[in-house]
Length: 160
Image (tube, rainbow, N blue to C red; front, side):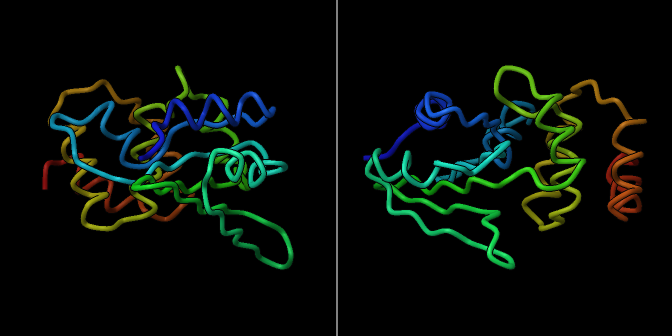
């Protein structure tokens, strides 16, 4: 048994934790063809109390810390793997504020995928572009420049 992203977001929201969908599930909202994934990636305004909520749902939870500060919770229930990432940077907080309907915008999916830069992330971006989704190029360029991934965006935007 697993939990859907909506189930997870609802349970966390009931505990006062604002989250938005990121990662492959968010990319699938904009891609030409859906890519199968078994994990759910969420960006959260806070992680305070999140481990307890996830455990109450039957998840096993691992807290990842840096200098004693939790920045990631990894949870699993059945086949569902959940990564709950704290919005630590100003860019992440901006992406959280810009989200609509519980999902980060297409521009923020692209920026996240550019930063990650793995082959599947590049494929996600190419599929989003192939779908013809309107993209605010100025926004993507601004943040791609900030994260030093502009050359990859330029290459993908050119269709390479």
